[in-house]
Image (cartoon, rainbow, N blue to C red):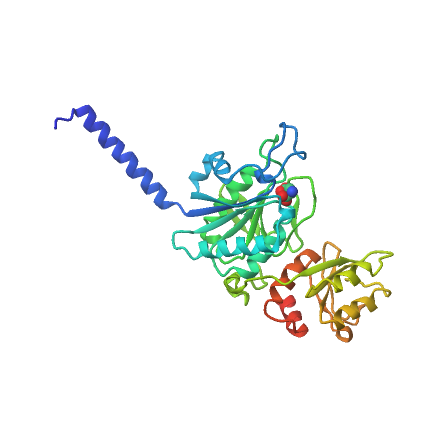
Amino acid sequence: MYLSPRFRAFAAGAALLAAGALAHAQSLPNVVILATGGTIAGAGASAVNSATYAAAKVGVEKLIAGLPELSKVANVRGEQVFQVASESLTNDNLLTLAKRVSALAKQPDVDGIVITHGTDTVEETAYFLTLTVHTNKPIVMVASMRPGTALSADGALNLYDAVSVAGSKDAMGKGVLLTMNDSIESGRDVTKNFNIKPSAFVSQWGSLGMVVEGKNYWFRAPVKRHTMNSEFDIDKITALPPVEIAMGYEGVASTAIDALGKSGIKALIHGGPGNGSVADRIVPSLQKVRADGIVVIRSSRVPDGFVIRNAEQPDDKYDWVVAHDLRPQKARILAMVALTKTNDTKELQRIFWEY
Ligand code: DGL
């Protein structure tokens, strides 16, 4: 069949372009984006609605299509695991998500995983994953404080950064990460510290690093056990035991503790003021809870610092566990995971020191 020189030239050029595109794609890491909802998938009525909007409206395919720059840093594909505001996630949601992450991490064609999530409880999901998913591959949580419809929305750059970090070899082995507002935070340490601005997240022991224009700058590494070095494995966890929280404050009554003690929980987190202090009138209720076989864990409502054992409370005498530097919501995550293996208080205290 006769082919004109012009056509042959065109065909050769097209073949070269295709080969070049294939070579480029093969040179990029493969990153899977698991979407769960939140503001990063939110939509507001107008561009000036930076705080008034509906979370969990935009699907993962639209998030990816709206950010073509992702193709510069990775080959991405998306899965919509849930579409919920994170304050409404359940223990079963946590198990479903973690098992999906674990399965994908085992796939040789997956180099990294990004999870889009609401900011309200991303710190809890991040800690749960770092405790239970056995992989060295980067698992990067990402969220946003403003919906994509708002002026100066933060989601697009946060997502670009997350995909870039998830495809980075130097992000391996650092536990589950969170990229927000140019920072790379440890999933264990990070917490939402301000509820209505893009610089919302802090880690009391400092960020692990920063990501700027697709390059990671590291300043420290986690020292607590995580992922491959964790004794907990999501592939062996089928259910999470119920653990609840009761806060401590001036004038507190024992109502919440007494009710929770009868609700079938396996551990009670007490989020006290100061060094996890317990009002003297509450001690008998906590002792009753302990006597009924429920583990009592003292945490502190104070943002920074850590609870010291046997300081103002006789933990040895009451057989209580202290939550170290974990805020009540994180202490609950570790308690649920730890109780899948043991309810021995000495073992639990070891676990709270090590994780
Ligand atoms: N409902 C909150 C959540 O899904 C919205 C906050 C956000 O994602 O920034 O966590």
